[in-house]
Image (cartoon, rainbow, N blue to C red):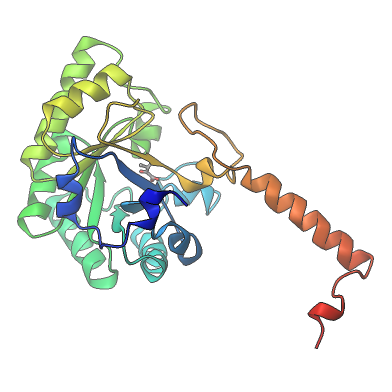
Length: 270
Ligand code: KIV
């Protein structure tokens, strides 16, 4: 455990996160259940209950079929395991298409889970929706750049910020989100120059994934970073553990011991 993790005991709030910009890099990981949320509780500032769970947890080809029920179920489980980090609920595809729908669903998140904020994909086009939520006391994290909920309409996962024009558009998206009252934003899958320009243009923290080192924090999907999701590995997803191999190796030992009747030995017998 790092010395940083050991001193981390205070509850993280939206204000804590806002205050970290340009002071200390923000750490965020996804979690989908109580077991992993407990493991992450002392170490990171933010846990995102990402709709990526639709792929890595539910085996779907993209995030689009996640719905409010699924996300609420997993968020409750995460909240049962983690009481220190800020818990962010990822609003699923179709749940914030209008201001009314967004407010109804975000209100439901606050009523039915202990999440402290919701995340919404989209820049200028979603600014009015974000404003409706923040004006009604819902904390919002934005998400710009590569937005997984646009995978079908854009025909794939496309890295953004590759030219001056697009960098300018991304900066405008980020400013619109900030003006709408978001407390932070995820910047996903953009060239590092673009992420730097966005981070310098706004006064709220930016949290990058595949966006280089110049954002105010980083987020990774737990099943990528710990090597449990093997279907594909994006370039940015550094693997900190070979989780799938560890599990398979341990399982092989168990199967072998059962087959040879080495388990259960006396030690594990009443
Ligand atoms: O759903 C998710 O896990 C996300 C992260 C990639 C930021 O939105």
